[in-house]
Image 1 (spheres, rainbow, N blue to C red):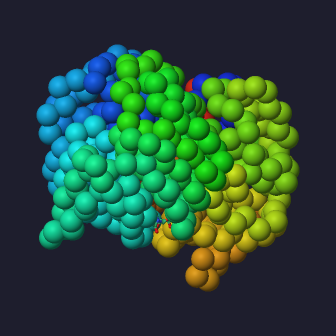
Image 2 (cartoon, rainbow, N blue to C red):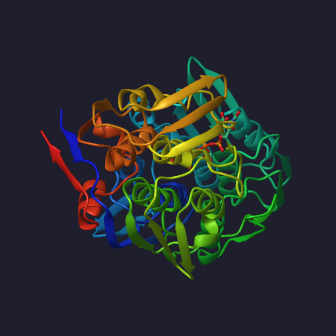
Length: 419
Ligand code: EPZ
C-alpha cells in the first residue's frame, strides 16, 4: 500500500494551474446522457471518481473516450438504465444518473447508494423531487426501480427543504425531460450548479436561475451535442492555498474564479496571509505562524464550504491561537482529527464543534487518510510539520486530487509517493 512521504518545512513557491472541478464534471458527465449525440468536455480532471463515472456511462451503452483532459461522450446508443450494485458502491454520487436516465429513457434502476466516510448520505430529497415531477419510484430490497416518462412526468414546482447540491442537480436533469415549466425552490447555489446550467444551455436546454435559490427549467426540448470546458476545482485550489499557508512561502493558483472561494479566502486573510486575486487567479503569501480566527461554521454556498473544513483546520492546527469550527453539513466529518492529533494537534471535539488550539508547529507522523478531504488535510498538515510524515490510504485522496504530489513538488514541497 503506497503512501506519500513528506518532509515538512519547505516553503512553497511558484504558480499552479488548477485541474477541472470533480464536483462539476461528475454531474455534467451524467447530463451527457440527455444528448443523443457526442458531447466534448474539456478541463476534465484525471480522478478515480471520473474513471468510475466513465465506466458507468460505457456500461449504459455510451461511448466514452478520453484524450488528455478532454472527454468525448456519445450517448446516441444508450441501451440500458440499470447501474449494477458494485459500480454504485464504487461511487455513491452515481445517484446523479437517476434524473438523467428518467429524462432520456423513462426508466432507471440502481441500488441504494450507501453511506460513506462522512456518515449517512440520505437521498430522500432526490426521491421526493423526482416524485414531484411524476416519477414512480419503488424501493425494493435496497434497489430503486424508477419510472418516468408518460403523461404524469411533467414540469411542476419542487421545494427542497435542504439546499442539497445533488438533489438540485438531479431535479435539473430530470426536469429537462419533463414537458412544461419546472421550478426548483430552495435550490443549492454552489458554483458547480451554475456550471451544470451553463453546460445544459450549451446543449440547448432552457435552464435559468442557477446560483440563486430558484432554478427554472422549461423541459421537454430535444438537446443537441455541446462542447464545454468544466470550471476549475475551487476545493483543490483551497487545498494548495492552505498548504502554502501552513508551510509558508508564496504561490499562485490559476484557472479558477476567486469569487467561488470568498469565504475560504476571508479566513486565510484573517489568519495572517496576504492575498491578491485576479479574474482567474489567487495569489497567497504566508510568512508568519497562522493566527486563530473567528468561528468557522460550514454552511451551503456562499458560506464556508464543508469540503474545506478539514483542510483549513489542518493549516490552523500548526499555527498559534485558537479557532472554533462548527460542521453543520455532515454528521461525521471530523475523522481526520485523530490523525492530526498524532501530529501533535490540540483539537477538542464536542458534537458538531471542534476547538483547534494552535500548537506553534506540528511534528511529522505516520497517519492514515480517512476520507477525501481528510486525507488532503493530512498532506496540508505534513507540509508545515517538523520532520517526516507518511500519509497512507491514498485511494481516498486520488478520488478528488489529480497528481497532488507532482503538483506540490512543482511548488517546492518535499513529497513523493513511496510503495
Ligand atoms: C455534494 O455532495 C458534493 N459532492 C460534496 O463534496 C459536498 O460536500 C456537498 O455537495 C455539500 O457541498 C459532489 O458534488 C459529488 P448535499 P451531496 O446533498 O450532493 C443532506 C467532496 O468532498 N441530504 O448538498 O451529496 C446530506 O445528508 C464531496 O468533494 C439529505 O438529508 O451533498 C447533507 O447533510 C463530499 N437528503 C446535506 O443534505 C438528501 O436527499 C448536504 O448534502 C440529500 C442530502
